[in-house]
Image (cartoon, rainbow, N blue to C red; front, side, top):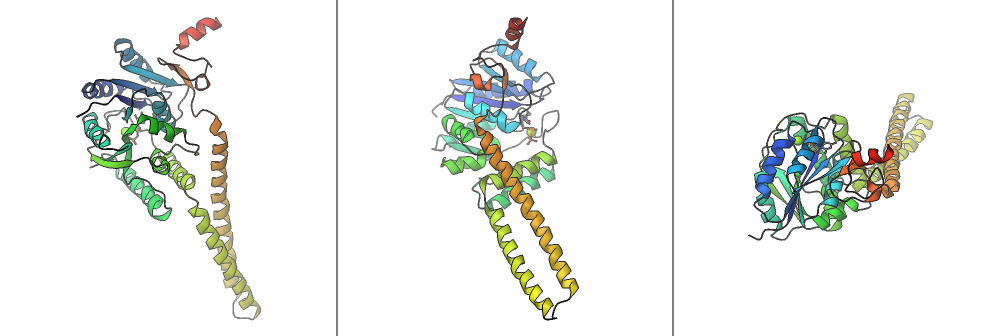
Length: 326
Ligand code: UDP
Ligand code: MG
């Protein structure tokens, strides 16, 4: 099998309990290839994750890292990861080792059959039932009802041609919803069933609010069908209202029917306002697209000055900056 150059990208947010084992296991698998690097993206951890990453970097030249100025979220973390990965292929892992490192070889082999992106689909997903139901439900709504092309069951464990992944995260959409953007750009993609592990230690970072927000981002970011349906509903209500009014005047409908229609109309109006407002939020996000999605406080690689909080091209260490200030 050809052995392509690979970046192992690991977004980390407060993963002090996992990051060392993740580093060791991922490194062991990665060393089966010749041209590799391990890129940690510390998403503003406050629990010693960054210190651990720096200790690996001090000993191991394969370790590169970027550390955000605060927690910007997983999308920002993998966006930075794909942007600063320097090898032709990038595999995205989870720091809690839910994506088994030994499965990366199957992803690599599949990609080399001629794909730009291969998404792992978790067999026997080791997450609570409501997470599994949530993923299935929102992907089903997106695909069936909203006509959004998204690989069924795709997880964030994936291999991507780095140049294509960079296009995906740089695309001028409001959200880097990777698995919906890659098909939109025409990337060749497929899915591959892989095993899945329970979280190694620590806690998952998703709550109901974040998960719902993520699903809504997908719906309004990639489809206008919700608006079309609501317009159809509003038009129907208008017709029903006019008809009822006529019937009321000629004495065939009573006050109860009118009151019910009135209430239904105001509820639909409320719904329309809420949905339209959500699309406006999306427009505002698109306007903010010129702004970097994250700010980097420290790194051991060169990063763009506009993405560095202290405005300089790095590599630099925060300590040097404070020396300047003093
Ligand atoms: N993560 C991150 N920023 C966040 C939340 C999560 O970089 O704001 C990382 C996290 O450290 C882990 C990966 O994203 O490496 C997946 O997160 P988690 O395990 O909490 O998600 P789940 O497996 O429950 O979907
Ligand atoms: Mg996890």
